[in-house]
Image 1 (cartoon, rainbow, N blue to C red):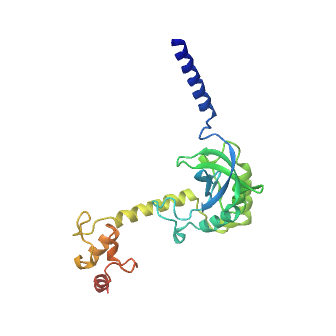
Image 2: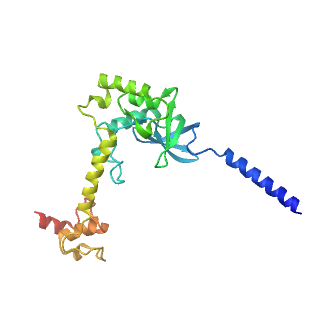
Image 3: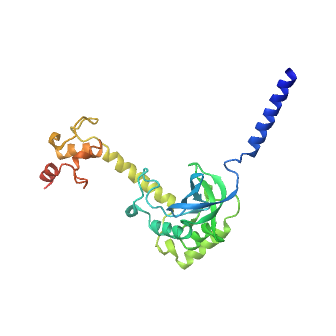
Amino acid sequence: MNFFRLLICALLLSAGGRALAAAPRADAAHDFTAKVIAVLDGDTVLIRRGGVVKIRLAEIDAPEVGHAGMGGQRANPQKAQPFGEISKRSLTGMVLGKQVNVATRAVDQYGRLVAKLSVDGLDVNAEQVRRGMAWAAVGWRQSRHSNHPLLALQADARQARRGLWALDNPVLPGDWRKQHADAFTEKHRTATQTPAGMPSGCGKKQYCSEMRSCEEAKYYLTQCGIRSLDGNGDGLPCEQLCVRTEE
């Protein structure tokens, strides 16, 4: 009886070992083909592969479109880094709705696949740099292989003043993110301060007739989310109260 128990255990351990060996490591390089269903910016796309997977293009860094480093806000074209939207359109034209080859390099700290994309034989990452739509990245975005080809493409784009290199002083996306993250933090801190005389939390008030001042109405709209105070959706609560006090 003990012999059969040992035999069963040995078979289970052997099968488990084979299953673990067959499972690919998260950071193992491998290629596959998938359809691009969305382009988020000049170096980030979403693909369909079982579910939705976010891909960060390896070895390049494109201008921001207003979402990164901005406290998780939605992308706002008016707040985008110069050439951010143009870079996004460039990548969109190359890959959106198309089957692309994805050559993965790693998984970054945000859980995104870092990969090189190609479509119809075109190296998409390199093409973004050649067009002046992205920098040849260094640091963690750079693969173990030499980045000299991308740096050469960048130098050529810079000399020809293509894309972002037509700007007098293009700012690296990392520097831009830091500057705007600091600005957002200060703006958010100021916006969320409780006005003088206001309660340190949201009460049960829901109607303009209950507001003592425009300042209180704005507080309940922006900090407590009482949308009934802004009937026409223009961002100004209790028009009769606020217009009267602000004129």
